[in-house]
Image (cartoon, rainbow, N blue to C red; front, side):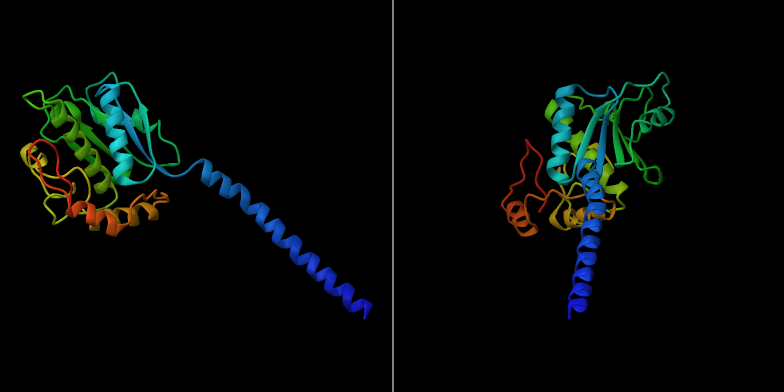
Length: 229
C-alpha cells in the first residue's frame, strides 16, 4: 500500500514539475510577443511637417485598429526614390510586417502611390497630391486615403464595390477626393483577417455590427470626407 502511495506521489510530482517547466518555457515567448508586437511602420521621409504626420499616423491607427509605428527618416542624396527606399527599408525591424513611406519626388510623376508587395512597402508621393488651391484639409485627407490604400493593397486586398470605401477604384485625384477615408465594414473585416495572418494583433474598439450602424448614420458632406457604409 505504501509503495502504491509513493508511486502515485512520484507520478503527481513529475506531472506538476513538467507543467511548471512548460509554463516557464512559454513565458519568455509570451513576454517577447507582448513587448514586440507585430506592427505596420509609417515613415515620414521629410515629406510633410510633424503636425500633419501625427494626424496621418493617428488616422491609420484608429481606422486600421492594429499597431502602427511612426518614424522619421531624412530624404536621400539622390532623386531616385527607388534607390532611397533601400535606405528607408534598413530602418525596419523583424516586427514590422510592412512599411508605408511618405516621400517627395523632384521629378514629375504620374503615379502618386507606388506599391511593392513582394518587398512589403508602399510609397505615397506627397508633393504629387498637393491641392492647387492650397486646401490643407483636402491635402490631409488625400494623404490619409493613400496611406490606407497602400496598406490594403500590400495585404492583398482588392477593390471594394462600395464607392465610398477607401479601397474603391479611383483613377484620378478627383475620384480620390470622392471616396471615404476608411474601409466599408466588409473590407475592414477582411483587412483584420489579413492582419492576423501576418501576426498583427487587432485592437478592435468596435464590433462589426456597431461599425455598420455607425456608418449607416453617416451623411456625405461636401466639406469633409464621407464614411464608408
